[in-house]
Length: 590
Image 1 (cartoon, rainbow, N blue to C red):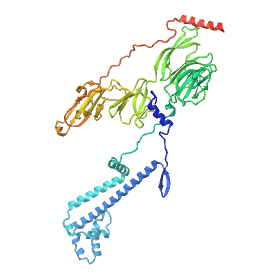
Image 2: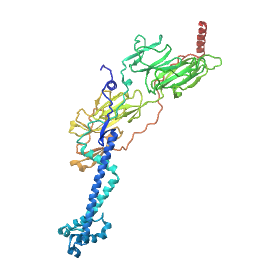
Image 3: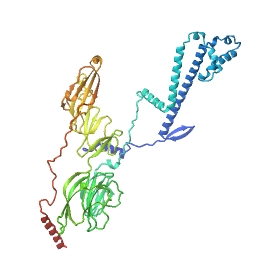
Image 4: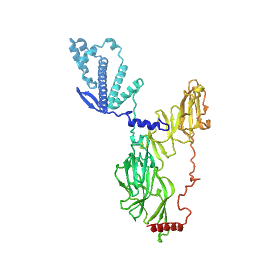
């Protein structure tokens, strides 16, 4: 790229004008009931999760049935052994197996209400298979304990069946925790940033105007220069009669001879405020208004006046940041007027829609309107947000609010590698993914950092400094790239807790007031060593001291605003005579 060309804007231009990034909308096709079916990704995921939930439900029900069967047989076994059914005469003298089963079933009948289910012949035959050795070693307490565990596990399963959604979510979390480390994600979840081509098109053209013939365009290189532009820009044009419109940028385009103002039009720009005084008709009253133009239909003519024939703009300024100046209105001399001067501050006029009538400035004829003094922005600073999903700035309240920015303000970017740099709040800026802190830059802010210094056997060092950042990246951590940052804080009076470990664990913990431990030094200073003992952890504690709030004081300016009044130093009578003389000269010429 040529020197001075923004790399960030060039990257955006690549995305906007080339196939560097393409939005793809794939169709997801699955086989359902032996037929192909097109579904959205959400539907596929929903079906997969529902299937997983159903499988978990089946597994829980299978396990529950197994436990119920085990509990059922344990209950039968306990009754069979404790009641000594195997020693009954009918049991010992029964001629057949069927007679034995009938006798056992008869003995178990009183216990049916406490059993899990009905007793079958297979259950009885299974009781007959119990060996005498097991009967002799039977322990009632162990049997009761086993049955209690079975019942508790059954209750847990019933609870899980009643909360299958939560169980399914925990299952997916278990899979992620167990296998996630071995299978890291190969894709990146990020929102796509919409890049408008007109905003990143390089302003490599120049807009000119020929007021005599009424032409504008990029090909009129011998005429009056207006501003830099690109081929994709639109141009907003205001005429002296109050009409205005936007047109497409062209090499040469006829727009009319009474052009008052033109510039590149920025869509959705609510901060460019137009301050206007217009006369309603040929001899009507003068109105004052402030408005912005955020969107317009191309080549359609609009009117900022009330539409009366003979209306004319008496005063006009375009203010990129909503500045509001003070104007001086000089009226035509009239014996009935005690004063012919009116001073009006545009900051007292509300910003309304472009079609608003405005406020009445004066009903008397106006001789001229001049600038009394420049003003300041009435919109305040611009609020800027940082969106970590796309690593970009925005004005749309997406992400983290960085603060209210004025023209001279900058953004401080601190990277995890220990590097820092400054940048402006242009929306075209790109940021790295390894950002540790991003905020509005305050040159007076004191930072406290703790790091393991690789040049000094990895001992922890504490340093306090101010970020003397520039637009060029510089490392404040350490010149050794293997040094590790432990803690970085901008708390005015931080408290640090050192917890000793290893062979020095008997020392317990120690609290350190960083502000008293070391003074503020340069960002390249190594700092002061905290300890040579083994440490288990270093944590920041809640502060107990806070900066004192300074009393509000009235701000005084050493450079008062320059008085731009063209009539400064003249008396009102002198100005009346000048105007009267001009009017007489004008009458003579007529």
